[in-house]
Image 1 (tube, rainbow, N blue to C red):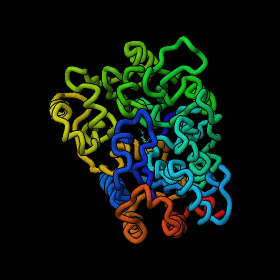
Image 2 (cartoon, rainbow, N blue to C red; image 1 turned 30 degrees about the vertical axis):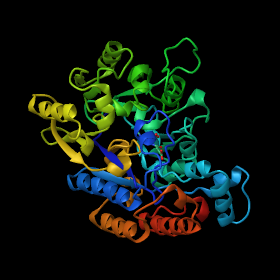
Image 3 (spheres, helix red, strand yellow; image 1 turned 135 degrees about the horizontal axis):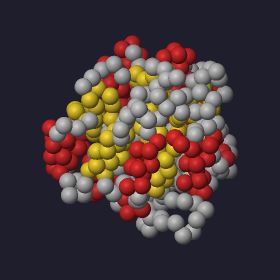
Length: 446
Ligand code: SUG
């Protein structure tokens, strides 16, 4: 029996070490802004402003705290010894590139934090979470232990929430979380179809694969998650991403497609077997008909989609249709801006477009949709979670004041070795766990 449910969005609060280190081969923005000076304060305030605007519209908005960076325990695991300041100093002199990796604020992109299956889809009727191992990139592979701890601290009640450890952290089971997972459904509380999009099959040498850039997600990882979450075969669709799209800079499916309710908004180059994928979704979706909104290359070239992040938008239910929350860059690319005007003028499911400024994150390849993890929750589940992370006017004010008190307004690669930065970050994060009421979740607190 279906229950009333809502989609809550948990945005990653941008951490105080947000910087541009060029860590993500295959992510065009990350590589083109390498070593630019970042502004962590502006980045965090842009993220908070997005959350506040959506919360003001009545969407349930949550906050996921940043991770501890630079991550001294990782440096110790790599053989650096001494006091924390000594570890930092040695890493900064001897392996600055490794220090940059363990300093990345990449946990802000919570679409990669985990894959989440709502209770309406799972065999035990609990909400299931699997943190993504993010094994494709070293700087991201260190996120999942803390992500898992945070999710457990927020979704604690085992009667409602089930937590799995990340998959084995090797390329065969490379998993990038919800960025490669879309749920289509009639109502949020109804059983839906979970669409898992992968870049490559790992145990099949003959399978199509990208030639230039890495495929981060494997079919085998997606299948393992479906099994762990107790999803019925009849409710899952596995789709291979078009390898040419990956080679054009589409390193996650959410850079080329986004779904909500019965609507799938995607570029014609998104899937290798477009017709089969749509047919499989149609045959599994109950209580509604799939509404594909397909963007052709004639309207928007894939390069323009990657440059503007058109598909890395949040597609949200609105009173008279659906709202597409797009990054500001969509109005800077002429073909995309034209396309958006035509989209809302036509009689389709997407009825409104709104622009959000998340430029600091965008310069590392993270748009509005990368910054949020969607968690569909029934009314009871929503009441059961740790409410301290739900954005209210008061929490927004407190977090804004906290950012202004603790964040720098410029950060270069040289600054990452500054022992003062480490102290500033720890002081800030210690205060933050108190503000959010999540207890001790950081290594330095344990
Ligand atoms: O994993 N960028 C992230 C961007 C993640 C975007 N997420 C989604 N599409 N859902 C990544 O490539 C760049 C960090 C740097 O270069 O400093 C980075 O990690």
